[in-house]
Amino acid sequence: MTDVRRTILEVLDGKTVSPPPIWLMRQAGRYLPEYRATRAQAGSFLDLCYNPELAAEVTLQPIRRYGFDASILFSDILVIPDALKRNVRFLEGVGPQMDPIDADGIDRLDASNVMDHLKPVFGTVTRLRRELPSQTTLLGFCGAPWTVATYMIAGKGTPDQAPARLFAYRHPQAFHSLLMQLADISVDYLVGQLDAGADAVQIFDSWAGVLGEEEFSAFAIAPVARIIEGVRARRPGAKIIAFAKGAGFNLKTYRQKTGADAIGLDWSVPLSFAAELQKDGPVQGNLDPMRVVAGGKSLDDGIDRILQTLGNGPLIFNLGHGITPEANPDHVTALVDRVRSFGL
Image (tube, rainbow, N blue to C red; front, side, top):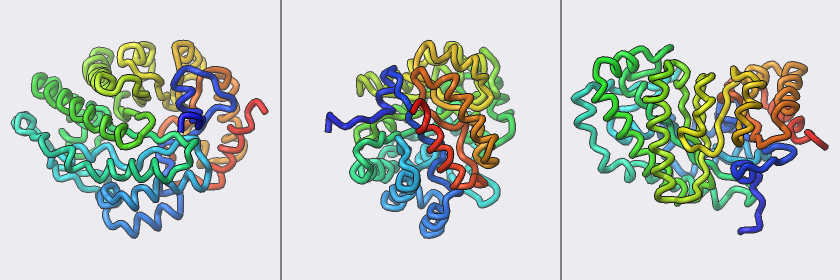
């Protein structure tokens, strides 16, 4: 329906909406009892990601509870290496693990069946667009090549991504090849999500903050720019949010150099700097997730500072990273109510 108002798309067009629309990264997650029940029903975490019925259910749960302005597809950034047969598994209390890749393995990567492997994800998107309220923006997503590559090289998450950084210095051609292959697969993946019913997409670069200036340009900006250019070549007008966690001052030119419509801000971005970034276009963020755990005055103060600084420009209110399992669902209710009362 063309007359339905999806406020997040309005912000992505550069408009100021008051009160600003809100959604939360990882809004479908372990802090919700209904998520934990569905997760137990699914079996493994990847089984949940590849089950359109259950993945749609957990995606819808926070929409039913809070009425967020956007719903983000429930999946994981590591479904792409899983589709590349890297033996991805999620170990309770440990996190994601996979078979580490080397330069020869990068040469042997076969992407021919990746989209077939990911068909259940597209099925989830189609189901969601059918079941979501018409005014709710549906977001798809992928992991940025740098962040996905860090897991593929180390075989697990590491504190400062030293294995990937060292590999990039020792094997620059192989590393470049890996980033470009991941970028091209991500184009197909995001286009598939848009075609299945997503209104916009977000690219998550969760480990951008460990990169120096030169590396940020080569490993974070260049592959994301390739993705955005590739998606827009096939789907002109596609709306794209790019979130480079920890990027700091590198965000100054991130939007311009990647072509993203909006940039996500983590909680460490000073609001004075965020206001400067907002002059060039929409921003998303950037409440510290720990304030949602704490609740009370610390939560209220954090919300108010963001709204007072950024609320009169194009803003999508969000956290500065994903909501944590320790968050109290009632604190999320208070958060939504306070944001929605802004300017009233």
